[in-house]
Amino acid sequence: METATPTNCFRCGGPYHPASGHLFREIGVAYCGGCYRPFMAWYKSHTRRKWGGADFYAEAATSIRAGIFPAPA
Image (tube, rainbow, N blue to C red; front, side, top):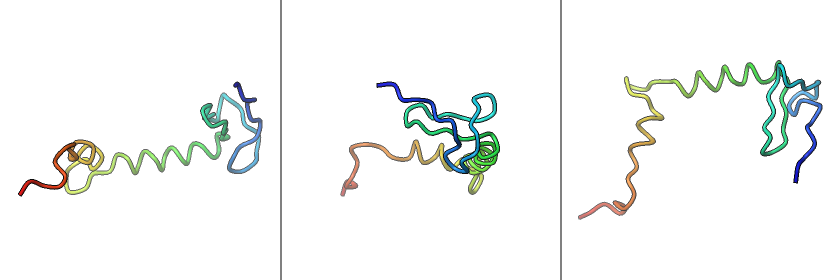
């Protein structure tokens, strides 16, 4: 079932335009450009962080191995 494209920003209620904002089609939520740009800047700054010289998200994604819990005696 196709949902109608929202015309207002989910966060501030301002007008949404596809040229400047972003639409999450899966959940039917639109953000205006003024709300989406600061969010993306925050998101990128947090996902590119390095803790102790290692990329936290790369280490976390590769550190869990299936089938070894509980740890062998």
